[in-house]
Amino acid sequence: MNENTVAIIGANMAGCRVAETLRQNGYTGKICLIGEEAELPYERPPLSKEVLWSNGSLPNGFFLHEENFYKEKEIDLFLGSRVEEVDLSKRRLKTSCGDELDFSHLVFCTGSRVRELGVSGEDLQGVHYLRTLSDANGFSPSLKKGARIGIIGMGVIGAEVAASARKKGCEVICIEPQEVTMERTLGKRFGSWLAQIHRDEGVDVRLGVGIKEFIGENGLLTGAMLDDGDTIDLDAVVVGIGVIPNVEVAQEAGIEIDNGIVVDEFARTSFSDVYAAGDVTNMPLFASGSRGRVETYQNAQEQATIVAQNIMEQDSVYHNPMWFWSDQYDINIQVCGDVTSTSDLIVRGNDKSRDFSAFFVRDDIVVGVMTINRPRDMGVGKRLVAKKIKIVPELLLDEKVNLRILLK
Image (tube, rainbow, N blue to C red; front, side, top):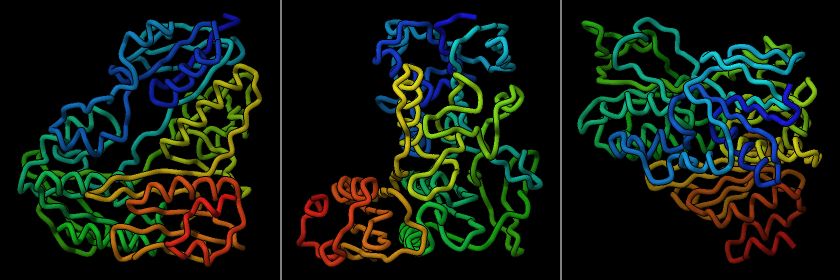
């Protein structure tokens, strides 16, 4: 066993953050970053936005780092390589490319994969999922002016793809089995608000209905039959109905699994010197006393930083409120904390417009914030949620009051 080797499974943002933070903190041992995709590690948020707008071309800053960065930091890349076996007793792993690597510390940043719909016709050409650069490049040519694009599932990815397709001049039909769009992240009230935004932008939003089957000719998608009996013509479709954590290798190695890799507040797994970060982790949640997975960019980034610090024996705790953003049309949506529970709601601005902030308050403590095109409000809101500061609701409601006063 190599006494000073960190092996990171997952050449994504979380995996890269572990590697670069180790170097920033003075780690001098060997670092191996292993990823299944052949491309250099890249940013995933642009896949549903800029990559689709620009006909598959890549925006500036798409790759997390250029290749020289990894050479300069002495981070060994194993790209296009899948970890097939981990032996924790020997502290050794094997990859699909035939490499065998010994490690002193192991980090799972294996992320998640798309959940498949499981209906007839799903294998037709023209039915797409969106998780990787290859997926985006495969779907992007379908976004032509006048093309009829179906979106199955109006979570974050589905809503962003719908906005991107409208930006390209497509006719868009969205199918969502739930009562509102993005219900899991926005709740019913503001999920309904977002559905109306999409309708205002010309999207045919159909709620409370699902897909029965896809229809095609000669292997090509031509439409879909809904479970209410209606049939719609389609040129292409994107399915976005959630993800499944990639836990198989960790599970086979004997690490505790429960809807993800179970970690504590230090991002440690059930095995000594083995950590995990990002979508794949089942972690203690902020303020609620419960556990769960948090599928956000911020979570992966911050939890990965904690992993690196704890490999360096800094005993850092990760216990931050959830925060995420989504850009759709001319709207920047940001959410922090719990915005779906039964809390008192205080709105600054007009919640029928595209410029307001909503604060979710329980016992005079802000437990959640949602801002629409008000990033400055979110800057204060995140600190209110994280610090659990008691506030005066009347001050929060008054737009003449500077929110920073509430932090004092």
